[in-house]
Length: 254
Image (cartoon, rainbow, N blue to C red; front, side, top):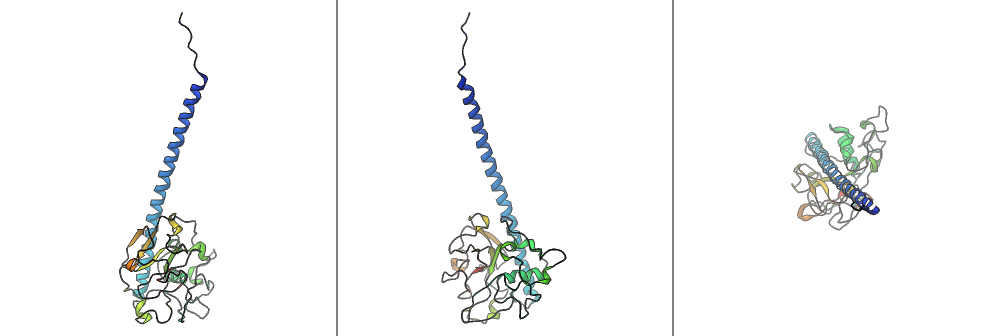
C-alpha cells in the first residue's frame, strides 16, 4: 500500500494570496485606465466649451463693430485687474457695475450670447454652473458670477491695460483682429508663474487662440514668442499686459 502524501498546510494559502495579489493588480490597472479615459473625455469636453466661448466672443465682436467683450474700463497709470465684483448690478455698464473686471467679460457673454453658464465650468473640476440665485433668476439680473471661484474655472485675457502700454489706441487693440497665436482664454490661471492650470491635474491646459482653435498645451509658454499666458512679461500674475502681444489670463486661482 502506497504511503499517504501529506499536503503542506501553507501551500493553499500561498496560492490564495497569489490570486488576491493578481486581482488587486488587475483592479489597479482597470482603475488607471478608467481614470485616464475619464480625463481624456473631460479634456475633450473642456475644449468644446472653450471653442463655444471663442465663437461667442466672435459673435459679440460682430455685433459691436469688431470690439471684443469687456465691461467698464477705467484707465490709470497702473491698472489693477479685479474679478467677481458688482455681482448684483443689473447693468454691467452702469456706474455701479464692474470696473476693470476680467470675470465680468465672461459673464457679459453669458448675458448677451447663446451660451449657458455650464460652458464656463471645466468638467474636470468640481466647479458648479451659476444658477443666479436659483428660482426664476436669470443672467440678465446681475453683472458677474454669483460665486466666481465656484462658477468660473477658466481664465480670459485681461483687456484692461495700464496707460501707455499699448502703442495703438486701446480701442484698436482689443478687437477681433488679434494675432492667431494670441491666447484669448484657457483653463484657470494657477496663480503661480510657469506652472500649469490645476484643472487637469497639472498636466497642462486647453488654450483658446485668436484664430478660434483650441489645443492642449503641456506648458503655459504658448503665447506669441513663447509668452507665458499666465503672467505678463514682467513675471507678474495679477497685472495688466505690458504690450499688445502680452498675454496675462485671469482670474488667478489663488
